[in-house]
Length: 171
Image 1 (cartoon, one colour):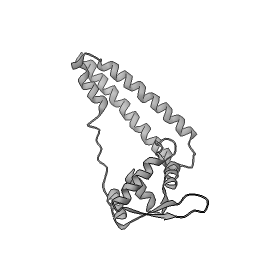
Image 2 (cartoon, one colour):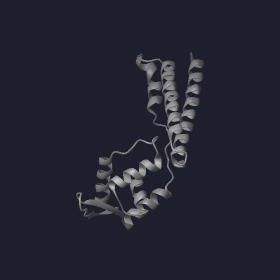
Image 3 (spheres, one colour):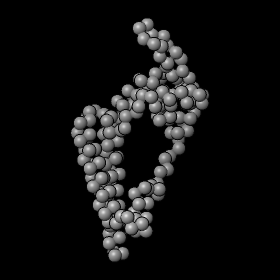
């Protein structure tokens, strides 16, 4: 949450609730909605680390609000984030760990685990399809997010098929 908040502040000052709304509008309903409390805690940490500065702004009929802006250090951290490619190979996969250890425990069968995981992925794909149909057509970012998730799920389904073929050959 730290760097996405810095990215939103790069365009100009904003308060926490405004940042929450901006994230929701940008990413749509497919992305887990941030908790406003989490946003304010993160903003506090960013301010403490010198990446943003907050300024209290008086409001006539409401309590003061705190508006945050990016510091030079924050802009540099954001620049470094954009320059660094993401390296997330899924070598540490929880499902694969279950699959690998199941025979040693006698508590689960590998093919049953694969079928259970396949059902989960297919249910998730159905849910994403419903989200895509309900999402505003003009929100291309949200549609790209959903499409990316669907493509990852399809690759996971293909991989499950491969695992099942290999394990059935071993029997």
